[in-house]
Image (cartoon, rainbow, N blue to C red; front, side, top):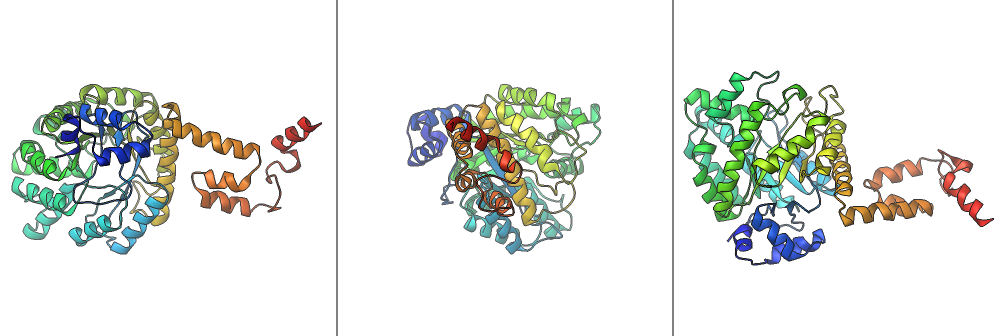
Length: 427
């Protein structure tokens, strides 16, 4: 049975107990959230990992890091290094977005080395296989889709991003209400092109019941993808985006009815004043399903710094109910990310998630801030560094300071406010 099916029978599984302990919540409460569809535990029955997670309401905000080969950069060793870097710096989950090289081999290595849940976007492999076999990445069938999904599920993938909301009806709305940027999701664009090429309905929508059978068999969590997400803040919260969201809400109900765990993916490029509305709409139309957001990026002008624009949006999104943040690296919109880009992206996203958790009044988050504040008051530099979100960087900054063994830092020196007040209070 899936974790959702166990929860429906009021059975607390060992996995639920383990994750509840990590979250500092009661196992019965976690089971209740899973039963209601407000939380998921993305873990394939064929994948054994050290750090399972739960995503959803009342839980800590999780962070995902994307890795994967491109058509230009396809060294598996590079992606494994990115994987290790992402996990070292606190990523709760990984997505393998590979489109270059031997995809099954890349995925096998990612699954082998990852200690956290792994997700994929199966349409990528569907398209790559079609190009290799038929010289055209749009020449695939619904059966080809199901075959890839089954192969990846059997291999151990924990969650799938599937673009089931890009349908003939939602694309019609997109055509009627023109956007500045159109479709910017790679998976969404492939599906939209396939629909036009074949003049048929999206197989991820028309064959959703068969997809549910595969997901149920391996307890793969479905992450219903936002193929019509806005790629410009000027397109945010438009009719096409909302039309897709409503379709995803309907599909989420069908998934839960079949015992399949499900979460919803969201935008994208969204200005600050629309983020809370987007979270509220997802919770409304998708019956409280966990919300997995890309960013959101709050401006379009920060190429090279989009890890910052997404962290700003992610912090706000998390504070008002987003459950899962997908990182954005400084390389977004510009190039294939490096190991350094991955590190910067993970740290920025973790800061955003933690800031959101403080607003959510998560006890573990508040305790962390309290501990480092106590260490600062005591001018305990070793403990401050250990408790920081990136100890390596904090240590490097401290060691570059002169004098290295001083009880103060070189910003304030002898005028350190904390030291002055401690000396003052001694008198």
